[in-house]
Amino acid sequence: MIKSIQITNRKQLLSVLLLLPVWYLLYVNLQNISDFIIDGLLGMPESHLSETLRFFIFEVPKVLLLLVLVIFGVGIIRSYFSPEKTKKALAGKSTFMGNIMAALLGVLTPFCSCSAIPLFLGFVEAGVPLGVTFSFLIAAPMVNEIALIMLVGLFGWKTAIIYTLTGLLIAIVAGWLIGVLKLEKYIQEWVFEVKTGQTGVDETKITFSERIKLGFETVKEIVGKIWLYIVIGVAIGAAAHGYVPEDFMANLMGKSVWYSVPLSILIGIPMYSNAAGIIPIVSVLIEKGASLGTALAFMMSVIGLSLPEIIILKKVLKMPLILIFIGVVAAGILAVGFIFNIFF
Image (cartoon, rainbow, N blue to C red; front, side, top):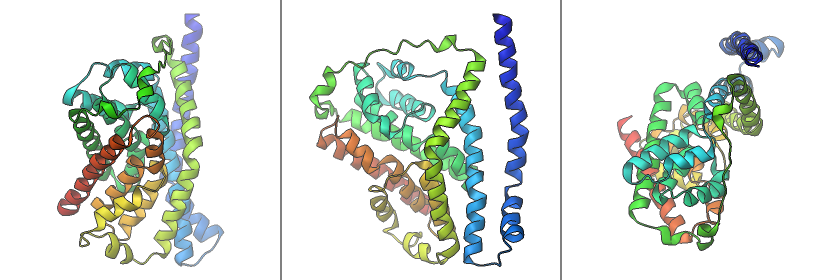
């Protein structure tokens, strides 16, 4: 039995090692491939349309390849976590350290805004403080591996690190403030009567080959859900790249426009997208003259304060708490936008 498991582990590892060089060759040759398609196969002269298509053909596989690699690795890491373990790790935690731990776990765990209600119920049952719960719920959709790797691919490490650190700071401070205000009275009464139950899953029994398999399954599941968002987001970005005048976004969302940050937040909140859909658009906004702070504020408001998430949370929270949640997070995003417009 042990020998059989060892053989399976080796086969799984070998398959990964064989696929990595293929991934690398495709990734480093994307620009050559896109140029060959536009200039060679299609023979298109330089124009707005050719630049739009060149951008689209290059960026879509680039983003997908980066996501496949990172999601595979994160899928293996996530096999060591579960909602039950997350709740146990946060249960009993309070004050600022609890908020920090919750925000960091939000980055590592596989939850999005659509999971808000079951997560909220489970955390309340486990005795996780309200403020700590909100730090987790803010960080999970806003700061995750998809956002990080797409930001690295489109903007570089500096912007990716800036976004990650500021997103975590907003999640930590917003959760801490909500906890300090003692707003438990604004949770719907029925929430305290629900018992979500235990999963009974013991992750320690999973073999390494099964974890590799989970990595492949995670890639299939997540990429299967978000690839269309990526295509649509890159398509919009490609159109803007090819046709929007250079000074248009600078006049609307540049550093010199004082209202650009609050305007970007107001525009972003009603929109519905995840990181995969909005980051390619933000990339082109910056390219066309939008300031970094304004673009980050727009992105954070779309991901962290989306209207669908607010509607979902209405099922478990009363309106005063929802309004406080929106206000605190929006204030944090506003501060981030202004700070980065001034200093970067």
